[in-house]
Length: 295
Image (cartoon, rainbow, N blue to C red; front, side, top):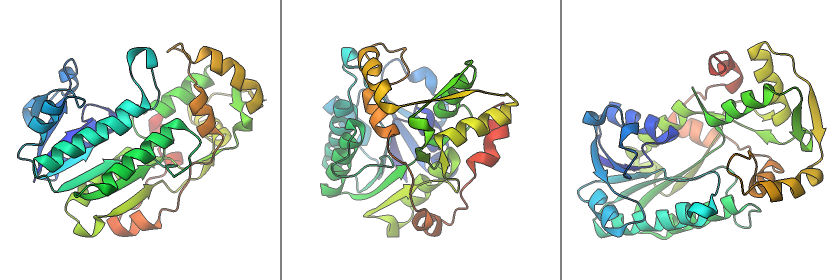
């Protein structure tokens, strides 16, 4: 099958594009100008240069493909540069859906996020929900994936925690009680790739998590142990963090936003039997992977 991947130069996209190619698919990438260097083995892929917000670029990218794997998304807004959840989730998804429909594409795989629901507190989840609704209302044969935190070599989440651990005292917002269920990058990409060849996954939404349910506090301590580094932690009430974050979030170097605080106040876990049984996967353990992740 000839498959278009959007977001194929990102962390998840790089693994997904490799997995698709290894499965025998012809892979086309929609790559915005300036990101070509992120595809180191470009000879293995057909590259269409263009922006997902440009109608003609989306039409060119969808011309002649049988399926689309849509991975474009952001985890933080930078409004001064026009980088917003509304633009990169809702608008981007609508653009590629419209182009796929016009060019006769039938199959559509959509990457969403765990925690998406109607009435979600965070704007991140609200725009992801709107994107899901657009996919479900389209005439395409769709499958939606909602992964938890994705871990793997060099993943952003583990790197951020390692950076925290370097500090003399590690702050735990809200006591670090919120639960997470990290899922392996390779398990996520395996599910996306397999779904293309599985008609029974059409019209379904799969929540992806690993076997470990861990509080943020537990994650911090386990990573510190894997690093062989003693740490001191400080429980910081959520209410005391909100005012300074609201002031500082405008600076890109500041690590937190108000929207991320809203997500930190909620558990991010799921039941995994649905995808485990459907894709015959034994999810990899985040805890067992830590010795390799912290290298």
